[in-house]
Image 1 (tube, one colour):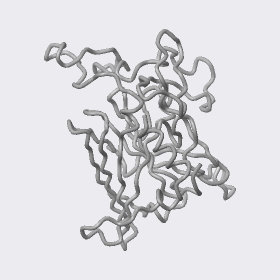
Image 2: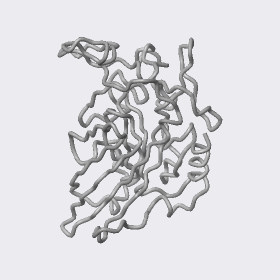
Image 3: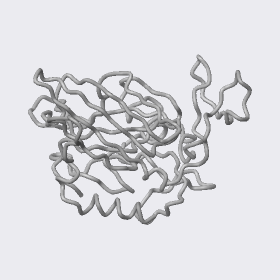
Length: 286
């Protein structure tokens, strides 16, 4: 609990340069930049509060992708700075998404993360499946461990993003993650400010798979994972790239280049959940 309070205090009060540009690591990285990730409970959200000011006209825009399990209820609890560290995490949909009634199955709400249905056959049917210890060898199962996930466990995740921009305009990036969900499936996203009406001013924020697809990594038994990618641009010189996000897929599936909040029938917070955000080009902190 003290760790979570300290993390929130850091995000709310630390100087912006501490998070934006970490000192280059030793070991021959040259001009490489290391950026420390921040454990979050949504896209630019930590316990319901904005993490960064992502610049005009968006300010503290973001979405909650992680909620507290409400035993016996139909909708989950919102997470706040006073939420206990042993709160069980569950699915939910942020009202800020503006989805109309009937846009998604209400059965997707308030589902503990470990109980989210997975795809079990070639027809893409979804179902709850037992632990690998309980299922027959030819039956769908959950990998172990598969106990409930608490808020403190979620916010214990750490990650660093290494960016090395090359003379030819490309960039090599590397992500190293620790304290992730063991055997968890994660994807890497770039969150961009876009000018959709062509008037010269950004008017939407859109996530896209960073470095192309597949953009997935799986956490090992020690809670560690890593990913390397080559980009055709330098992230620190692309002002429209606001953040880089690591999202966990509670259903164990990935969706190529389909943006996480726009997945048909499965809005952000029901099967994808941002766990780490890296600030790339943001105006400051909240």
